Length: 82
Image 1: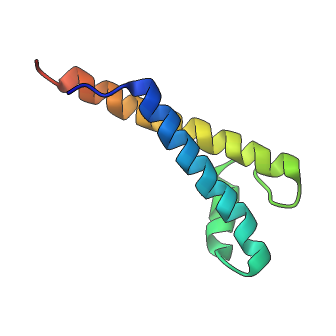
Image 2: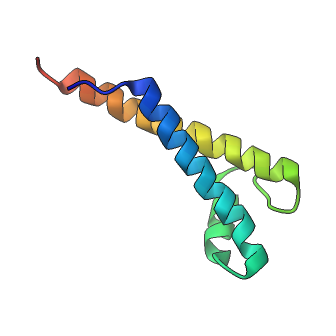
Image 3: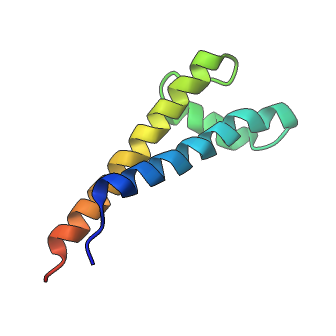
């Protein structure tokens, strides 16, 4: 069974971007401080002090997960023998 690379990328990108949104909001409630600090180092421009900083992080996260999932599905489909 072949995987749809685009749809898998969209699904993973959406889920990961939502996760990053949670990481951006959590420090306001005293949660996930270390995860937030790690994420700010991983995604350039990501910051939870402004809406623009959060949006930049969401775009980075979406692109990161989309490309990763797309490549996994693409390689999987290439290795599949039918």
